[in-house]
Length: 309
Image (cartoon, rainbow, N blue to C red; front, side):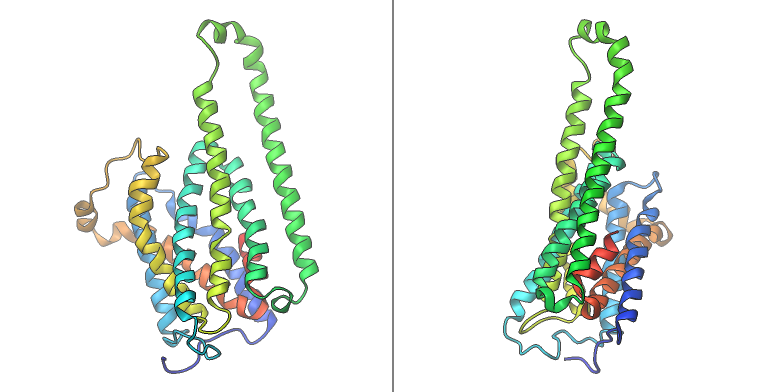
C-alpha cells in the first residue's frame, strides 16, 4: 500500500464536473491526429506512450500509489487486475477498428454506429457491472437518456442511407448503359462500404466492453482504485499496440498506402516529432481517468455515458 488515500470527488457536483472534463477530452484528442505527413503507426505508438505516462503520473500523485482500495480485503484482486488489463486491450482493438471503419465507410457512418453502439451497450453493461440501481441516483433518467441516444443513432443511420441512395439516383439514370457495358456497377466500392459498416458495428460492440470491465475491477473484494485500474488498463493498451498496428490494421487494408513501420527510424526521430501523438494520448488518458474517478461518486454508468456523448 502507498501512503495516503487516493483522491475522489467529495460531492455529486464535483463528480459531474469531472465527467464533463472526460467529455471534453474524449471529444478533442483526435485533433492531434490530423498531421497527414506522419504515418499512423508512428502516431499511435506516441499516443500509447502518452497514455501510459499520464496513467503513471495520476497513480503516483492523486492516487498516492495505492493499488488496492481500502475496502478491498485482497481476495479476488487477481481477477480485478485481469479485468482492468482486458479493458485496455479491448479498448485498443476497438479504437483501431473504429479508425479503420472511418476510412472504409466514412465519419457519417462510423461515429453514429461505432460510438453510438458503444454508448448504448456500454452504459447498460456498466450499470450492471457497477452494482445496478445502488450505484446510480436516478436509473430512470439514465435509461431514458440511453433510449433517446439509441433513437438518435437510428435516425442518423437512416438519414445517411437516404443521402447515399439519393446521390446514386442521377448516376443510375444517366450511366445505366455504361454500367451494363462495363460489366456492372461499383461493386468494389460497395463491398468496401459494407465491410466498413461491419467493422464499425464490431468496433462499437468491442468498445462497449472496456467500461464494464473497468467498473468490475473497482467493485467487490480485492478491488482496485480508479488510479490503479487505469494504470493496469494502460499496460493492456501498451502490450496490444504492436499487435493491432502490425497485424489488425494490415488485415483490414489500413496500411496499404503507408510505408512499413521502421522501429529504428522511429526511435531515432527527434523528440519534438513525437509531441502531438504523446499529447493525444495524454488528453485521452486525462478524460478516462476523470471518468473513472467521477464514477466512484456519480456512478460509473452515468460518468461513462456523459463522456461518450
